[in-house]
Length: 412
Image (cartoon, rainbow, N blue to C red; front, side):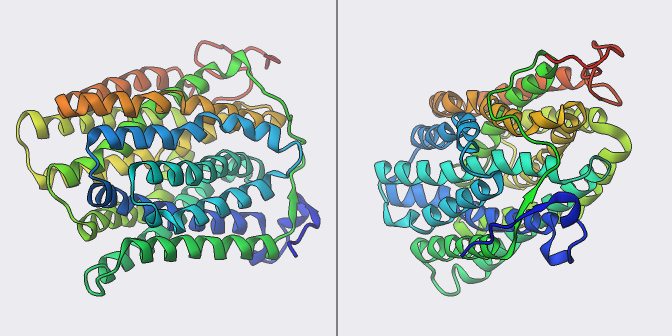
């Protein structure tokens, strides 16, 4: 039976390392990408081989995948009856189980249905996990700890991808076997977490209704732009490698391995950099870099640049996105403690507004002009850069933007 004892957070921080809240965050950070990253690595080859997907179908697939993200505001209703920690683990369980059976439904409708179920697990986990991270991690250590969490997730992905690269051709593995194995490992980790850890109680009770505050407007705007921009990377950057350059499963996986090896090495350094230079500078650096990356992606189509540049850009692109945790710590610094859980759900929904319609629409643009899709992404990164310039060097309640001045923190 799952451990349902409630332990105050300050007391739990004195537990042995293997029983602490941060250890649970690390385990969940490893469990999620084992299923999701494997699904992603195989996805483009699987849907092209099994169901003959083009840019149109892949756009619709990712639109369906993002619908649960748009509806993640429903987390607020669920935490009325379930603790956030339990919900996070149940969501991870759903992701693992859906990933395990993905290859059993090799048709357009079947792939969309299984993707919807796995997406519910992924997005509800991500929404609650962000809330738990900001509640359980001390503000002074947040950038460094979040950097380590990114590194742990990257390490788990690297392990999964390494096994794929070494065994896919050597043992002539099937999609069904790999999906079943990766989903099964995630399920096993989740079951361990349910039994091994008590329920940790944060000191600040969370509001359990929708929270929208005027003073968080910049955070909401940055979340919206991040969601729109990320879709182009997630949907079309990897699809380009398969459609334009004919990458096979082990080649796509090797590229992903390079990404996560770089993240393992650099994410802790990024965390320290955010702690030293601040969220404003970190996000300005990220968005300025992404403008250049997306314009270079366009050059691959407009100027005929080759596969080596495309692969290098993909790795650089992924590294820039790893800095996204600076947006989390920015919110942690400006938020009222009780706002974290409901605002995490609201922000996740805002992040996915564009994700619901953008992949499908851009799928039609892709078949006409792939370069235009990446030019649009560069424009989105430019808007994000403009918004990042409004973040103060030292954000806090009452000083959420450079326009706020040093005013007392407002309730709204």
